Image 1 (cartoon, rainbow, N blue to C red):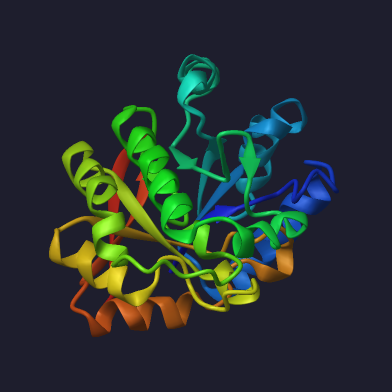
Image 2 (cartoon, rainbow, N blue to C red):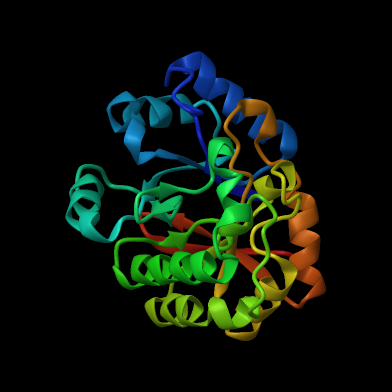
Length: 253
């Protein structure tokens, strides 16, 4: 019913023009989505065109089109992110961690390092940075909570212990976590976060949203029906969208 994590610009391999915006919205319409959230990576900031998205959205009155972006969280760059947030009346902002201590851990060139490094250590460090992101007060949403598993390396320590402080910070800040279906198409071949974490998130009363992390129009809404079913199975009754940072509830019934 909603996809709050799509990348119009992909990996900066296309333009934010009418044709491409329509391709995303046409696919959202075909999938029967009620809400779609454009959230390009902040490092493509100069290529974004938020007013044009909203202009094209006027031709799609049956879809709530939301504008956000995905910010790469680094502890020393909070002021930079704050300055970006202040430049447009965003509906939501996703805070994500794809790197720490100079290590961009989710690119294919770094897969071999997941076998060489101490897995418990880099999981612990990853969740330390996610905790700082949650505590920053900058975001509505934390993206793909356990992205660190992307290449299938699993810690010896219990994932619930490793993620505990981050989940506590998310709950205290009233943030939303996404079920991100894109992990199924990575080497780990499963949604972010894993089911045990999803169950713990539900137990703590933290809200969920849904995201395909689509970097092309044909992937908008991909596997979100299955993600919704999973949430219903563990007792989640609704998911969250956003309008100008206010939460909008969508029933899963």
